[in-house]
Image (cartoon, rainbow over all chains, first blue to last red):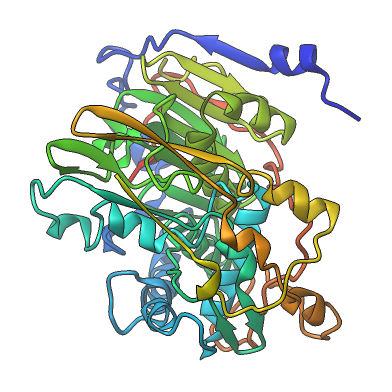
Length: 342
Length: 120
C-alpha cells in the first residue's frame, strides 16, 4: 500500500528553532533533587571521542565500566580505520583476497551491510577510499588546519553489494576500502549497554560521542538527553531535552568533525553517489530507534537524503528531529515538539 | 575534479549479473547515466558518466551462501567476542530500521539533562 501523503504531511511538524540561551537548560534542579535523581556516571575519552556511562545503581558502576571498557577495546581493535593493526585495516590492505576475521569484526560488517540495505546504500561501508580522498586520512585531531585543495573524489557506490562473507572470513572487492564510521560506535554502544544492564542488573546508558543506547530499567521518567548539534557542547548546548526509556538515540551533524582543504570546509558524511559531502539541507539529524545502530544509520541517511528525509523517516515510524541549515526544526513520527527547552 | 571509479577489471567477480527486480531497483541509482557536479576553484563543472561498472558484475556468492547453514546475521547487542563467527545476511532484500518501543518523551524545561546526543 502506498503511503498516505496527507497523513505523512500531518506527521511532520515544522517549527522555528526558538531555543536560546535562556531556554537552554539553564534552570538546574535544586541540589537535593540532583542528588536524588541523577544516577552515577563516568566520562572518559575513547574511540577518538567521549564515552559516557550512566547507571541507575551507583554500586554497579564498576561492573558496567568493565564491560564498556572491554567492548571499546574490542571495537577499536576490530574496526578502527586509523590503526594499522586493526582488522579493518588488514581487510582493506587485502582487498580482493579472503581474510580471516574475528566474530566481532564479522558482526560489525554484518551490521554495516544491514544498514546499507536498510538505507538503499545511503549508509555505505565502502566509503573508506572516498573519505580519504576528501582529506580525512587520519584521526581528526591529527589533521592539519588546512591542506591542498581536493582534486579527486572516489566513486564506488554499490560496492558493498559485492562483499563476500563466509564463516570466519570475508573478502571485499579489489580497489575498495571499508569504513564503519556510521555504525561501529553505535554497535559498541548497543553491545555494551545490553551486556552491562544484564550483568549489572540495573538501568544503563552508554553514550559514545553522542550515539546513545539505553538498556535495563530506566530511571523514573526515562533518561533525560539533551539533543543538539555537537555532543561536546554539553547539557547547555542549544537544542532540546527529551527522555528515552529504551533503544537508541543518535545524532548526525554536518557542523562537527569538519576539516579544511584548500580553504573549503568538508565534513565526514559522504553521499556514496557522488563521493562528496551531500548538499546541506539539514545541519543536524537526531533519530530514535530500537537500537543505536538503527538510529545512527537513519540519522546519517537523513543527512544524505536531504529534503526527502522527513518523509522517509515518517514512513519508517522513526521519531526524528531535523534541523535545517537555517536552524528551523522539523520533527517527525512522534518526536516531541519542543517544550523541553525549545 | 578527477573522478576515480571502481573499474570492472578490478572486480574479483568475472560473472555477469543475473539481477532480480529488487536488485535492479536497488542498483538503479548506481547504473545508467550518473551526473556528478563538483566545484573546483569556484567553477562548477559537470561530468556525465556511463554505467558504473560495478553494476555489471553482480556475482553469485550471496546465492551460494543462501544455502549455507550459517547465514544468519547476529544482532547488535547480543554477540560476544567469543561467539561463533557471525555471517552477514546474504539477503539483498530491503531491510528496515526498527522504530523504538516508545517515542521520546518531552521533558520539562527545568529538568537537568543526564546525557547529550549531538554530532561527534
